[in-house]
Image (tube, rainbow, N blue to C red; front, top):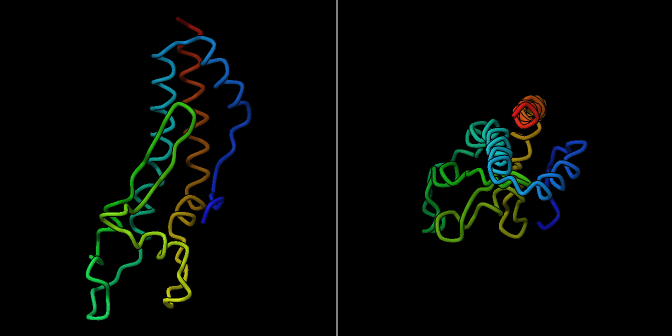
Length: 142
């Protein structure tokens, strides 16, 4: 479902990104990417635990392998953002159907990624604020 996302808005982030581009400081950009990844990693274990557990039945698709969806949860980070993604076309092509539902097939939505983010949004915000502040202090002191 394009446009469906759960996000944390950070006040002043656009100004920080613009300043990073102007400084052309690769170390600083790398450190900000690490902070983005660290903040997203907080949500990953909860998202993996939230994946619906199911045993394979004779009616299931041959591509369905229990446990593959939980293993496919990954954190992708850049200097601009971080995201938690799950499923791939080859390993867990049913990830979208599980998360957003597939009414024609009788699959109701199980928005485990959104729930994981909602449960951990406070921790993510605190971590992000603390770590970005530390990065800026390091840069200003050097």
